[in-house]
Image (cartoon, rainbow, N blue to C red; front, side, top):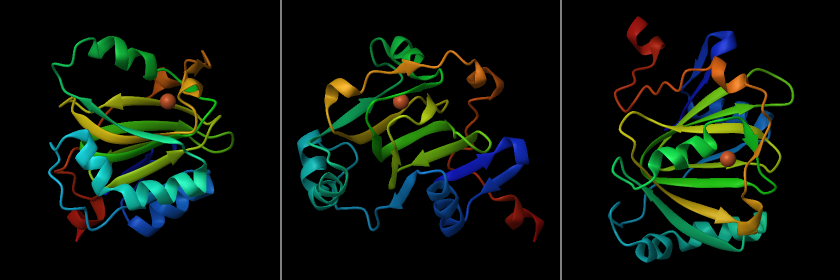
Length: 188
Ligand SMILES: [Fe+2]
């Protein structure tokens, strides 16, 4: 399950319905694809894409996506820092950023036109659609591991346009990790 944090309001959303509604209110689609298909997280990309073909086809039909691939990032990935530095500053794309997480974690920050900056920590089973034009940035969590299905309307549209606002510098790329325990649970 994803976790949404709103640092400016000192709020953390961990309830699936609540965070889904909050994300929808700023134009971001969030889904859980459950149960996960019977395919190993380290299976070849074509097996992953075949297993999730029904969901991928549904998204393609609704969002006009034409291609899907699997991105695989490890701590030892060649050129990882250069790759991460392309996306960890506030930017937008001319097409949607659509990710379904197979393994690992990641941290999206979204800066809506109206409302505070939010952090969305995603993990396996989470589908996120950040619409074209949305200001956002992305960091890996400390384990620097993520595997995700990506969908594209047009691969050429997925070049980052930087805002240069510097807003990203005001937010820590902090992940809670899988051991995260909601505060309200601790209080009880
Ligand atoms: Fe992006």
